[in-house]
Image (cartoon, rainbow, N blue to C red; front, side):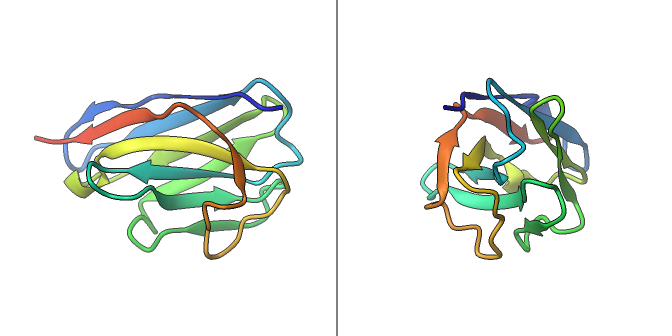
Length: 125
């Protein structure tokens, strides 16, 4: 029911900032949404999620204090603000939506039904 499209990826120097956007073809207000990333040779890992209302958020320990997830339900958009980027942040970033409105502390990949195509973020000097 949902089609998700990420944008905003690119090349950035360490310490720099980048904001990723995710646009949905359908309404997002009933869905919990999240960002995941995948580096070569590694499994896809959770980065952050936010509940349908925006009241609850969870972050991977590796990005706490540097990344901020947000959403604008009126625009059917979600965002990931990434600050103080590090080379280890490099990877393909995916936005995803659950069928329901949760944002679990584990950020398990299983509840996420809808996925974007991914956008590449490269952090390098």
